[in-house]
Image (cartoon, rainbow, N blue to C red; front, side, top):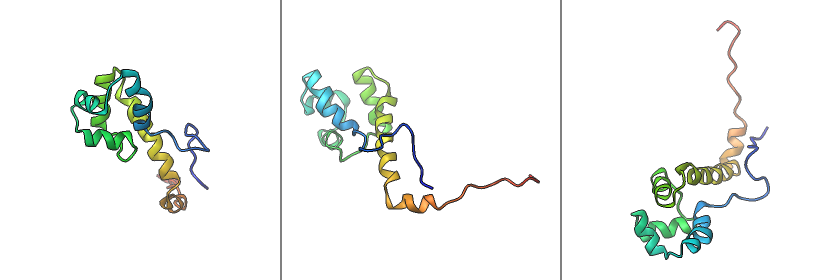
Length: 109
């Protein structure tokens, strides 16, 4: 029995939130990576890693993005969570996890 999550895409990896920022948000705002990093109060290196999918969006980063872009942090955390869960479901550990069985409460309890 394998675990499936209905809201995750089945045939493709979810888009990394950094890709959304790099391809959609920055061009729309007409900002350079350096300018955007300054607005967020983070290093250019940290932002670059996020934009290129080499670093996850953390709650701290999500709050910064939400404040600067006028969104909710859950937007960015939701994208990151979908990506992380998709990867976890396809990891070697997922096969071991699939072997686990639910705990059944006894009738006497």
